[in-house]
Image 1 (spheres, rainbow, N blue to C red):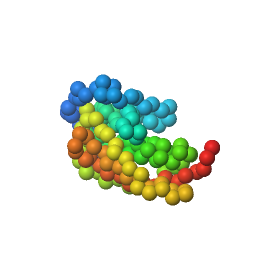
Image 2 (tube, helix red, strand yellow; image 1 turned 90 degrees about the vertical axis):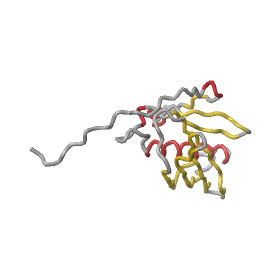
Image 3 (cartoon, rainbow, N blue to C red; image 1 turned 30 degrees about the horizontal axis):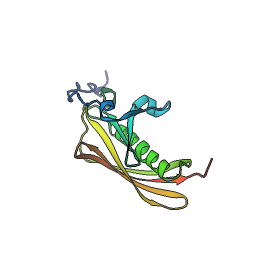
Image 4 (cartoon, rainbow, N blue to C red; image 1 turned 180 degrees about the vertical axis):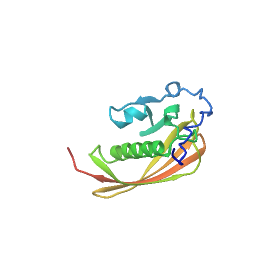
Length: 153
C-alpha cells in the first residue's frame, strides 16, 4: 500500500449561479474550432470602434479549490489581447512571444469576466499590450504581453 495519499478531488462548486445573460446585454458568442472551442464560448461586442471580449465562468473552468483555473484566465487574456492587437495591427498574422499574468482575486463560477485591453506601443515588428481582467468593478487579474508581427498574408 502506498504511503502517498491521493487527492480527494475537486471540492463541490459552491459559486453563485449567474443570472446575467450576455446576449441580452449586446454581447455575441465568439467561437473558434481550436482550443478556444474547448474552453469557450467567449463573448464579443463593439464599443466605440473597439472590440471587447468576455467569458462566463462555467463549472468546466474550475480548479481544485472550486474557483476559475488560472490557466483559463491566461488563455482568455492571451486571446483577448491577441485579437485586440490583430485589429490594431491591420489584421496581420502574429504570434504571442511573451505573456505575463498577475492573479489578483479569485473568479467564482458564474462570474462574467471582461478584458480591458490596451495597445501600449507598436513598432515595425512588435506590439506591446496590457490588459485588466475585471468582474464588474473588481480587477481579478492583470496581464502584459508582446506580439510579433509575422507579415502580411
